[in-house]
Length: 368
Image (tube, rainbow, N blue to C red; front, top):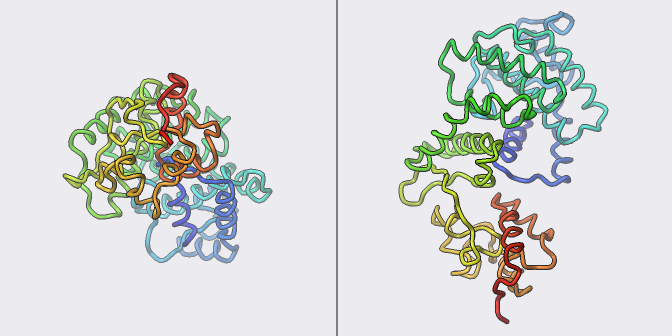
């Protein structure tokens, strides 16, 4: 797997709500650090784009540490946008990698040095300073914004300036869907003090889109399109979850309906009760595995049709061993098995189990 593939998959996993254990974070950080480009590779890149000597110039518009594979193809962004220029493609490649290093290995000396030099470089660029709002400099501005949110979250003035410049440029042309997703991705990750006004301004459009997915679904054109639309849907979910009134959709994932084959997202206010809760805390009535036809119901088939478990659901088996109707009634809750298993499938019911256990500690238990 290339550094680019690893970066994209890690981003998609995090956006969709997947948990990444510390050991895996360390592995990803090592892989990305090992992928740092040599000085010879950097020089060849600048020669290829006819910008030799740009490192010494005051306006350093191209990366210094991570150079993308230069085979004539541009690399898609996290949300699937296909760049037309190396300005967007190459900066996206470096800044997304550095962002993961900031999150996974902030204590490493080489990471701090690369991040510090990159922040200084970005301040000299037209897109980093927000001076250019045309072409793909406008789109690159968002990649810079997302990087700053992770690497310099205290610099709210810089972030607000980039948001203002982006909105000015967005009003002059029709933005591709993938670019809009990327902007919403940035908003979902920005400090609340920076994002609050933009969250309110974009709320209705995001809400209408998710409600349309709930009613009509979206046509899927192959696996690549399914992945991109799933990521876009999770970005919109994450954005709305920044507002208290939509906290109930946190943890939900889009699904492909077994009947119409279209991608849907459930916006209903689901209520998990003692009667419909499964041992892990999810309700089979609202489970994506059941909706997609992969499972008929946890208790109905003894936890043995979930595709994630070859020999049956481990949480279901554990609940039988502890004679608990659901994990919230177990003295060991939440145990490592529960946290690992729910993180793997991205469908944790932690909050629901705490609510149910607190509401009625005399709920029925499985009979011996």
